[in-house]
Amino acid sequence: MRGRFITLEGPEGAGKTVLAKQLVAELERRGREVVSTREPGGTRLGERLRSILLSQRADEGAAPIDPRADALLFNAARAQLVAEVIRPALERGAIVVCARFTDSTLAYQGYGAGLPVEQLRAVAAVATGGLVPDLTVLLDVPPTVGLGRKRGASRNRFEASFDLAFHERVRAGFLALAAAEPVRFRVIDSSRPIEAVAGDVIAAVLAAL
Ligand code: TMP
Image 1 (cartoon, helix red, strand yellow):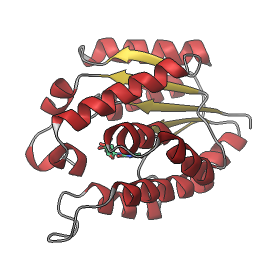
Image 2 (image 1 turned 180 degrees about the vertical axis):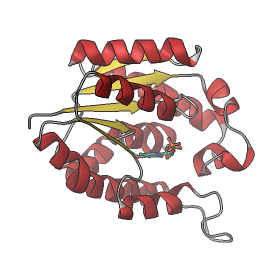
Image 3 (image 1 turned 90 degrees about the vertical axis):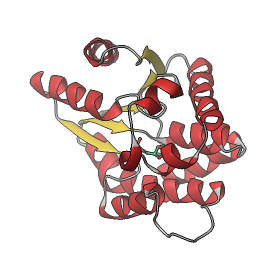
């Protein structure tokens, strides 16, 4: 495939959405075709799964969603996104910028919720047909800082219903994934003001392209 696949990862409140926008604007300014998307979501099916997965009250009174069901639903959204958006864009030579991808399942359902990481890798390989990002920018932020950036009704199910220890495991998980694959990952301290973080993200991506 001719394009480049870049993912932004990190715990809650790391600034992925804002930083993705700034990165895409900078790449477009340089004349590149950029496709910007996110997980879960990015397709009609994916956005419907997103509302099920992230709503704090998708089905009030129902039992909590089991982590294995979470893992499979996130991967269902991922499979559709890869087939419908990401692969076609890469095949025509575009840069794809995606907020979250397989590493989020490994960090949240693996390190956070305790499912075996190697099983999750296998499920994700089925969903993605083995597609792995060329570059993954890990926006690292302590959960106390990240969660403090989001409040009340704007919090998703993970932010509202999972405790601080869960989010600490997620953060440590991301850092472990980055340490295991230093060529693919760049770790950026995202507890700093957003302008400083944006400069580092753009520099990391331009250096890798
Ligand atoms: P966000 O779009 O605000 O980052 O919200 C996505 C939420 O879903 C976030 O809490 C992380 C969670 N998530 C998982 O638990 N597993 C996954 O595979 C993905 C993509 C997201």
